Image (cartoon, rainbow, N blue to C red):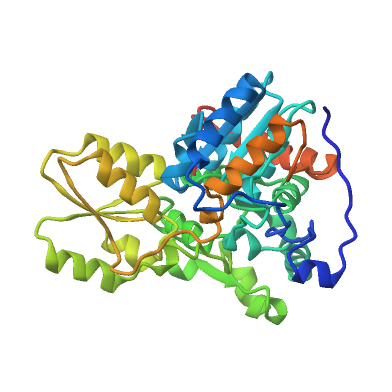
Amino acid sequence: MTKTFVEPEPSALLLLLGQATDTLSERGVDCPGDLPAPSDPDLVQRARVAKQTLGERAFILGHHYQRDEVIEFADVTGDSFKLAQKAAAKPDSEFIVFCGVHFMAESADILTGDQQIVVLPDMAAGCSMADMAAADQVDSAWRCLQAAGVADLTVPVTYMTSTAAIKSFTGRNGGTICTSSNAKQSLEWAFKKGEKVLFLPDQHLGRNTAILDMGLTLDDCVVFDPHKPNGGLSTAQIRDASMILWRGHCSVHGRFTEESVDEIRAKVPNVNVLVHPECRHEVVQKADYVGSTEFIIKTLEAAEPGSAWAIGTELNLVRRLANQHPDKQVMFLDRTICYCSTMNRIDLPHLVWALESLAEDRVVNQISVDPDTAHWARVALDRMLALPGVGAIRGD
């Protein structure tokens, strides 16, 4: 099979009913057909049989934030870009089943061969952060920078957590992609090339990297709000800023607060606070350790037995780490339960349905990025991979 791109024409009614897909929306909503009941006691066995039937034809990717019931059937686990790279390294696998969210499957489609089919078990598994930067909004923001006379001085840097369309915009306009592991290298490259950076779509990662790693200050940063005229900024503010941060954030990491840190320190003596750089700046400032998901995992692996850790990231991962390290006290930073709701849409019934469909040679929920968008997104990704020390990427 070869990749195809079909432009749908969904009616508003079908979209509201969840029975059509809008390719201009990160969170496309497909009715997935007849799913097995969640209470089906044979789900695990059905997943095993379908996976065995597919054999090497299917390669299953499981993001760290997935449920344990899904991770059990993943051939490899990791962060979004690491998984896309793993898929690209399996050219003989006909089907790439991406247990993650929509933008991640797009990246896999961009990086894999034309003969490979990328499948997302539930098309409603989107990403609120990626949704916060729509292509028309970013184009409008760029026109604001042009009107201010600074577009030629500005280099876009886009976080991996973004749609293919935004990655494509970045490639077309001379910019690069970053993960939370290499944001510093990407920003260093950008500032050598221009005087300003437009950082998309996560304001917190951009701000934290600029201030903690680049020596910039809060005064060097402004936030561009796509819902306000001229981003809610004066022309002078745009011209004076070094970092123009998009007003976007992660709905999970954005929930952690200074009070969360203060409360856990009061409850647990000598606790180590370990957070993801998508957290708010004031939370990152109060933490003991800050780093990507891979950094968080490796830090726990290297930690002393008996040590206490409060982790500010998605709850599925925190619980998995706690189970993997019973010799350490591992806890969730916030007292409020906080799963990634869209990531959790990928459950065992959806995975079984997708695998059984593929085993019957029925392609479902295929993720296809049109060739032009894929080309420019790949240009931006290749610029990132060419940065010193970035080739062996560790994810976001």
